[in-house]
Amino acid sequence: MNESVPYRKKRKWLAGLLAMFVPGIGHMYLGLMQKGVAIMMLLALNICGIVFVSMEFGDNVLSIVLLSLLIPIIYFYNLFDALQSAEMVNDRSAAGPAGYGW
Image (cartoon, rainbow, N blue to C red):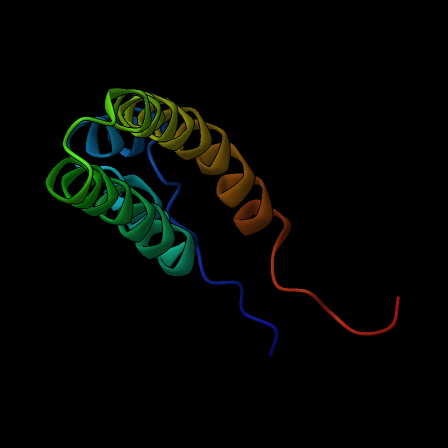
């Protein structure tokens, strides 16, 4: 009784759209929860760092600018990785469960 359950392919465009609106949600849609939460936390920590530096060291413009430049880097990494991960997840699902032996 080796019944194969049909898998549902994850839509690449939907993962990209979700990642575009809220960074990390595209990964969660793909089932990559840890990566999605990590991206959300990274973005939140970056924003907290910008606020902290601006409040504690108000005249340190260079640090604020450098921390602010990380936001688009994180955002576009998130978008690109969600699109690439959609293909990986679909390929892994199409291959079936990992078996033992041959």
